[in-house]
Image (cartoon, rainbow, N blue to C red; front, side, top):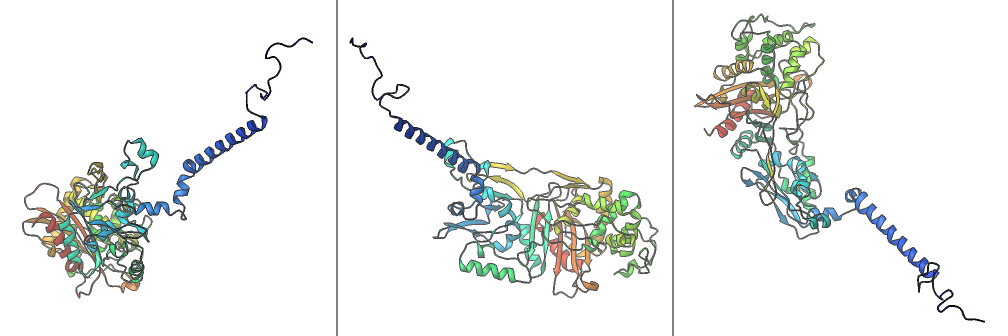
Length: 507
């Protein structure tokens, strides 16, 4: 039998495709391993890409919490000086927040606690302060792949340290708040709330921190309540500035110095109840708007509010910031309220800052600032700029118009009403030598049958005498509880406003 061709026949050990040295079993094992590698890649992609955010946020995941406190937190600065810091703990969470003069700036900074989270600027700017803000990420590919944490950035506030100190000193032991604004830009110069607290007292997670937190939570004076931003009060007669602006805008009053047809007594429409005054100078008919503002006459302003009409009063109030639920600075304040549905009696009460009308000190400072700035209300802002840890800018805030509440002509007329109230009327305690000051007092009733201690208000603006520039400061002060016997805006709140304005003017 002849032999076949050399090398003919099927080679031993070859697979079906002729791959030498790989058995069927080996090929199956290799295929299975490839499938396992593929499954691992799919799983890793799912976990690291698609589910990473949910896993990062899982409360059982302590890795991010440990990383969060593994390095110093960025600082919050007032002027060029940090009012915050970080210190080592020696524990699992390596660093905790510290505060320089914490009680003075608590209403600005808020708190950052390992156990209780954060608030105020510590909360709204947390991403930048911790270094997790995407704007801090460099161009390094390795940084992106390794997810390296960037150093925390810094927050520069708009606060004027002299104005803040004056606000806190002026309020002292009284329960109350101050908000001061630069009218031309909307920069918040002071934001004070008393009683206050030390945010460094519970910045860690120890038993002492828990004790400090629980003590503050149990305090009936609510020292952690930011009364400048998060508490509303009936504004009382300070709201008459809004009513006067609305009456002048609507043409109900054309000459603030001319007699009006306001009757006395003025009986609330649809009732038998007269709207009483606290000043005997108000108890006569036909008073001019100027005389009524100088003496703070309820009967005249309530009557003019009804004459002006609900829609006009509400529109003017909203131009100054009322009824805006998202007035972020960037911290979100409580919503200041003017009802959009009222009968005429309720409108009369609302026109003198009573009924359901309620405002934060911030919004009442916006009222004074808008009058000072020819009727244009600038958006209030608490942050000047954001920077990286090396000082390079991430973002610089720019002045922005919030709303044009009234015309420059009407604003000029209201400024005259406010200067007369200081020079000749109830706001005399706000006078500053060498300066022009315009203001309005307010004493707001509250409680069951008005049995509560009245809220003492004062809003104002000030500028150097002889200056034609926009006043550099507008302020609102409320004293919510005091042991004083004379609980009026002129007696309690005006001196505090005067101190803040003097600090800004340098007088």
